[in-house]
Length: 440
Image (cartoon, rainbow, N blue to C red; front, side, top):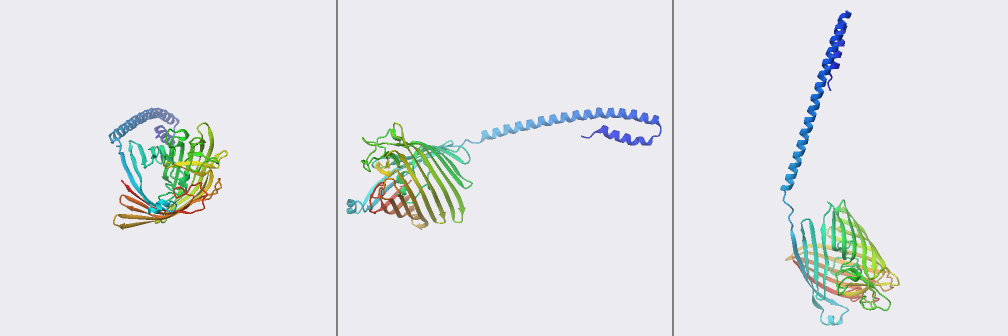
């Protein structure tokens, strides 16, 4: 701040050198003192004026901020509310032709052509909540594949609640063909259970999925259902004793029913961008309990490392891991799906290696072909049975609303290819299969 009294003092003191008499000096000092008093009074007035100006500016700033806040509120209220897209309905109808090496009657007929499924899909949103569901109708059962509500609670995070997908292994599938991979038949591919899933959207090149599943999609060991094998996904539903059959119902008299519960599952994938596409390198793990309807009967866990790489038109998949169901005096578990009971070893190692090539074409309605070869094996089994393996060579065809799989399957001890995952056969079976689906 500019100080007038100091300036005046400097000027007057500098002028005293021009006087030679003491009386003149005394008079000058008196005048200087009076001038200093006047300058102090003037300085006080200037300070008061400056303080008043500051207060006025603060009041103006507060008024401007208040006005801006009112304007922002009016703009927000003027914006139209997010409109619900409603629920869209889609679905598919699929039929299936098969010719097998293990069914003599079917071979005599030249194979069989059957109805496969009719399915309905529901998707959409109500406000900020997204809804998704799929129900499948077969000749022999009806099953809900998934049914969940989802909400984006942060920029990069989504939560799903209901019957949702268990995060494990190559995503979304560890295969390319109609029959999936060997991991599907032990409940570790495209499995859906009742719980909550937190998904981090792909950002900064990594993806994380964390889930907690209270029980399987049919309510666990004491779910109120007529048939615990009427489901889309494979789940453990019991354990086997030495005298039980491979395909026996574990819930029947003398059986040993079980249900999965309180399962934690996590999947991490790191994405590497490169010429020709993207590669995901990931790791998955899960752990949970097994309940017999009265008390905890055991626990289970599984892990897998996996790679899914897109190189131009090529897709390469690899997955390796182990699973372990720990129940006293049991080295074989009962599983259920597709209204059918089967058995698996309580512990085993699993490996898959798949390759596919996608080819866009313009052949009338045909717009795309994908050629593939998928191989999977389950080995080092705790029940000391022969390995389970399956190799599928085929092509999928996209033509408008039609999508067709043409597969030739070689397999040993493989469900739906003449065997069981707990089988002990040394025979290799074959299945030629055409599945045609119309999607709407």
